[in-house]
Amino acid sequence: MPTLTPFDAVGAALAEEMRRDPTVLVFGEGVATKRQDLLAEFGAARVRNTPLAEGIIAGTAAGAAATGLRPVIDLLFAPFLTYAMDALVNSAGKLRFVSGGQFSFPLVTLAMTGGGWGVGAQHNHNLEAWFVHSPGLKVAMPSTAADFKGLLKTAIRDENPVLFFMDIGLLYQPGEVPAGEHLVPFGQARIARGGNDVSLVSYGKTVHHCLTAAETLAQEGIDAEVIDLRSLKPLDEAAILASVEKTGRLVVVHEAAARAGLGAEIAALAGEKAFARLRAPVVRLGGPDAPAAASYPLEQAFAPSAEAIAAAARRLCT
Image 1 (cartoon, rainbow, N blue to C red):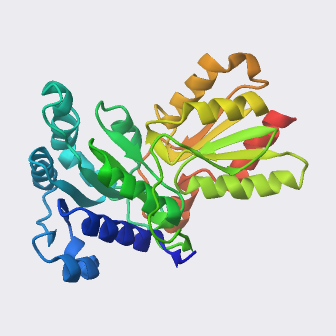
Image 2: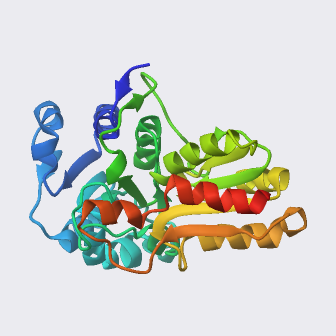
């Protein structure tokens, strides 16, 4: 299989879908500048830069989707989504329902999120739980180059608006990507590592922290299973519950703030549907309830480390 970075895997997915479907177009902040290969192949009518006006970009995309196009918009950093909330949440997310199914909104919004570049609090804020909480939207956040490509192709073909979060810390970490047609369905988690003693459930860059923690735990005789959610909405509840029922222990890990995050939802799921199989309390590891620091070492400390994950799992197993 060829090796690509997630950034290049996104480019490959866009190119393949634009060749397949002439209604797919890409616009946003700097897309024609950083995706010059797409501009050369498809022209300025389908690949274009926009002003730094997120609300206008998202509003234009919602209108374009309603008229039969399939826009992919790039709003750069996740905190800028706050300027686009009305178009994405109140329009694109709700109008298919409000119209009784007369309109579809096949719209994908790309946004970089998380630590890794030291860009400071106004550019680094994990907002994915906000959109999971919003009806009508789907949310994806991959951890591997293959899933960046496969999930994005699925998102472009979906009839609903999709928030596609790209973890900054992963964008240039190469990985194997299947050649040719490669689709990853929404709502299907990936078992990144099998295990029987404790379940580590995560998404984005912290999946890799969980895998590192699992290697450490294995040296101590603790067999950790690592679940990569990939799709946050729809959520693969079956995969989570199957793992918890097998191991009896659950640690949920994400970089976003722990309070009211995905970890709380998954802990509630385990408590409601697998309580009898739990052998220890569910543990949530998330970021602090504070803005992210611009300092690179402090930014790295913001996310749960492999050491903290291993320590939490160790406590549950002893």
